[in-house]
Image 1 (cartoon, rainbow, N blue to C red):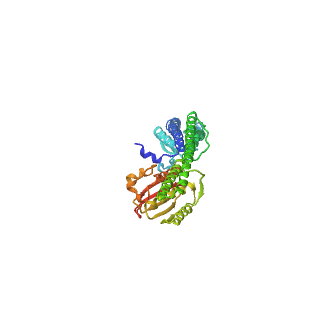
Image 2 (cartoon, one colour):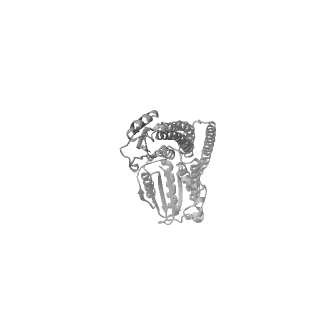
Image 3 (cartoon, rainbow, N blue to C red):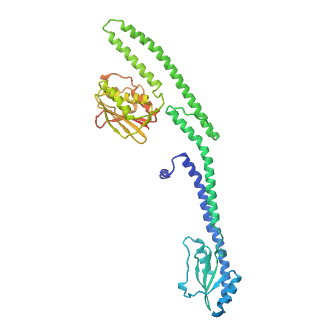
Length: 438
């Protein structure tokens, strides 16, 4: 039922932690403020207004038998005892007497309501500001104006409590957020180290923070060490296998070169194919992500690769370039990935078309061919190692090893990108999109 709320929530860990921290503080402040205004401040204002209403009723009784000529003197004398200012206004029309109140003066509503209920001869209550209040009452001798300080009917400086509440809440929120950020920083560092390790980079990381975060960090370091040991052991094993197999293959080549027989060329072809299979297997097992990333122009890399295939006699065309700029990529690995895709295109088709699009966050290399393509239900299987989709590809061009797309997929993942396979809308064959982040 709260799925609609997800799109409005922050996505980062800092943002969500800040929301969890700030939301309760704001809620408590709002509850306290509303309770104070409606309960405490309103009750105090009502009690003070009731006391003033009793004073006004007493003055009205004392001045009810005073003549108009003596009203001003008698009224000032009596009002002075209560700290009030008595005067007789020039305007006596009740409809013309001022009765002002600002729209945000909530306590003024209480003052007007209480005085209107308890003072029977009240004509008007004027609340021009936070300093003074003027009350107009009707007497037998005429209309009287009684002015007094606002603090007689309202609590003095009620806004100070609200201001201090907001200031203290904001200050403590900043302090709490700084502590919370220190607790979240180790998690972010571990996420950066894990993401870099997944892309083939080694970022120094030292566990810190709370006990649980340290435990997760130590587990990550142990896992990374185990994976690195396995990779190192596999590399050593493959190096030994490569050395052991290359030696007898070399002897076979030398031996076949000394044989004068019609079947020698076929045997030499078998040995060459075995050498090719061995090289492909070792390249896939070792991975082609070695070497640091470099800032390069993707279109220059693609044009150089296309030019190499054209010199080899293949029908490869660089179609178009969208966007401009540089990207941080591993040139050796990206070159091998693009060469594998173009090699597959010219192997199973007669023409290949290459394009490049440089976006704000990623670079897309697109290779299209006019071959038979790969059915949609078999594209997931095509990127797996040693997968051979014989019905989908032209087998007159050779058997292949079944590692080309698997190597491209590994290179894409090592860069944090992906390989997408689809049907080319223009050429009809396979359309491979190698998408890498910039």
